Image (cartoon, rainbow, N blue to C red; front, side):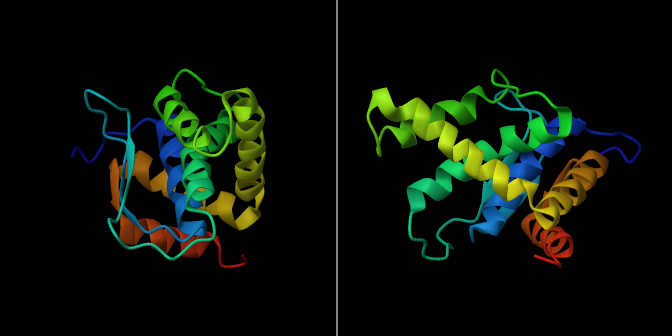
Length: 157
């Protein structure tokens, strides 16, 4: 990676949002990247097979998936529905496991409000800012670095 290159800030906030909500909900992060490829502008990868038992894994996955768009919107003031299309399609598939097509949109709005509330927490938002800043600077950070920055941001959580 080039040392003097800066990576896309909006994408950094998007991916940082996924990472922070995942960590807040007990899902370990493997790596976070804003290095674009043919399919995506960035990616938050999770560790395989290492998750804390959760009361509702489906809701956790929905919240993590919506967190990128919500963090991006909190940073820019605008929801990037088109840019989050891949996440939103995944969310819809998950939501339809829980509810009917008729009720899906309302359920998705409720989940988005819940993730916005999580990100509105000062510690969580500080963690998003710390992770996004590292992504802008380096392009990629390890899950260990993301966890460290999450812990730093959430010292008061």
